[in-house]
View 1 (tube, rainbow, N blue to C red):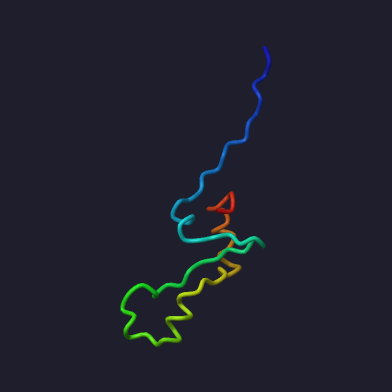
View 2 (cartoon, rainbow, N blue to C red):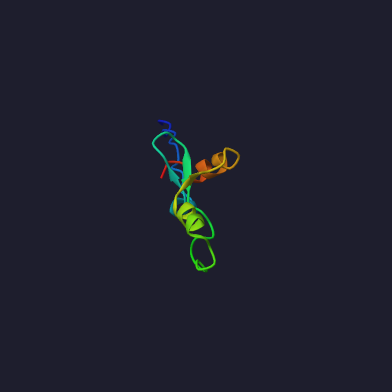
Length: 73
């Protein structure tokens, strides 16, 4: 009898990470800033502008996030 072919299982994407992080074309992981959603009246204009922009994840945390996004969502 013929042996069944070994298949590689598909990896599941962590849906929470998929909603929060994005992998750029160069392979870096991008995230949004915290503290930018409410109580904005007490924050300076300059601070709010900076919080609105995305930022690259620190190199220490990137491998863990990349593991949750196996297909580079």
